[in-house]
Amino acid sequence: MIKLHEDFIEKALPILKKNERLTGVAAGGSWITNSMDEFSDLDLVILVIPEYFDSVMTERLAIAESLGKLLSAFTGEHVGEPRLLICLYGPPLLHVDLKFISASDIVNRVEDPIILWERNNQISKYIAQKPPKYPLPDLQWIEDRFWVWVHYAAAKLGRGEIFELIEFISFLRTNVIGPLILLKYGSTPSGVRRIEIKAKEDLPKLIKTVPEYNALSCAASLRTIISLYLDLREYHKGPGFVNHIEAEKESLIYLEGIIESYNKRRT
Picture (cartoon, helix red, strand yellow):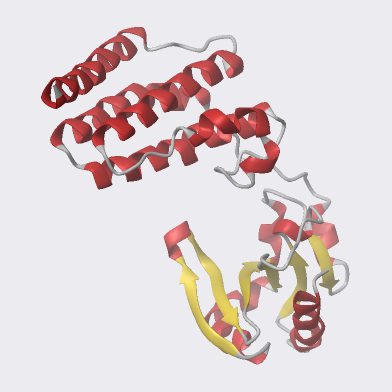
């Protein structure tokens, strides 16, 4: 435990325990994996007695303010989690995620948190009902979309919309390539999180998916994305998997035609 994080917890827990509408506090993220460092944020789950959930949600900013010197806070709709309050405390600066959930909702979770405090073993009872389940990539879902995505990226390349293409290559890396690589190494398929450490063998090729701001660099990165996907598809596919052979063929022809046109313009 980093002292800055420890100091925050030591101050926050007694305050939260006094709130009779709360039934527990748990920690997630890097605390679970014992990988916290000075750059880590604190991921705290605050469990609310169900009948008080609405009132706590109304007052959650005030609750956050009571835990330390709050510099700024906002809710997590941008990551699909409106129950999340993203907070910056300090100085010294500390990022703390406060996720307020109705106590029974912890049954459906992606990881087993570290219980920091619970009232009447409430968190333990809910956790015991079923194991956590992290959503895994659906290879068929990806295949059904991938070649349409390749055509879309090629069209952006052809139009010269380089910034949009760079963003879309990032989307493919984060939502397709990263999770499939991490899954191959037995890691949680969470985008590209700590992929530099968890998938060192694939790192040289993954680095090539990061383009410079020019069309041919983007084309090379896109080709690498496709190459990685084909290898990962072969690695992960199982019985009943359907390759979209015609879509693959035509989208690759289209992409190579766009790249060839760029090369002709250069000469």
